[in-house]
Length: 326
Image 1 (cartoon, rainbow, N blue to C red):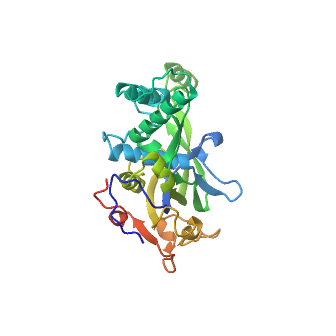
Image 2 (image 1 turned 90 degrees about the horizontal axis):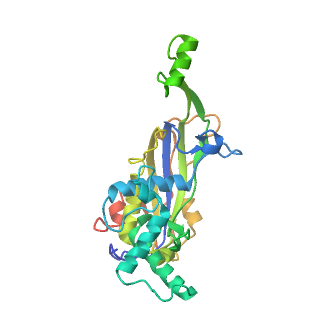
Image 3 (image 1 turned 90 degrees about the vertical axis):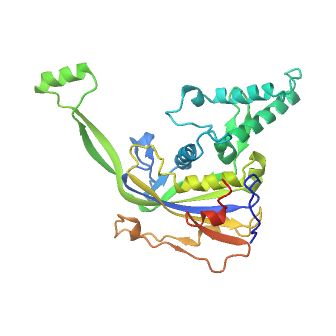
């Protein structure tokens, strides 16, 4: 296996494939707005689903906390509590052109030729990759109005799927307050007092989810994704539920993060063969899981192809990417 030191500023030059397990207790990990915010579910297998977009949002939230105010680690897709300007994408695109123009790097030309536009778009794209962590990590389509091009990011994450089928619960909740004077008067007139408001809450008693991810070094070269970025990415995954702002999440925790490191850009084995080595048998229809200890997780390390290392995070994070790389 390639054991060369990883310089924090150097571009990731080898492939990584990883498996992650997380669980939820008495919460809703990813509500479906098209189904009354019920937990997402595969209608054929009844397995729970958590989308890749949901997982990326949690990673972004962790990055915002871990790399606050660090140059080059701003976020393109902000949270709902971000300031007004930071949620308007074309304003962020314009920042790239303004900065390039200020530095004299914009190709003024006649401003009309296709070559002139393409050159400026490429420069704006590179500026966005340099300044926004989630663009150089996950990619982005930035062709809306103010054109900064399109970026394919090196980090890819799949949907997460529950090991066993889930049975969502919908419980009634009450609030003894009302929102408006009119509502209060209406209830008082009908019942003699303010009766309050009824609502519904969707939860799962328990579910263990499994997801997969990939780091493609060929795309890392295009976006400037470095080993400093890689360490922050995995650190954010480890702590993504610590900074989760979802009010309905319940108790969620990352249980395992198994990373397969290749010693080359092309890799030494197909990802699916490596993923098959992380085994989490389903409990079956006769048992209802209620805690992580109900499952037996095993990792088959024997017989790995030469040039592949296996790391379990967080305990092996410093071995995977040295602490100086941050």
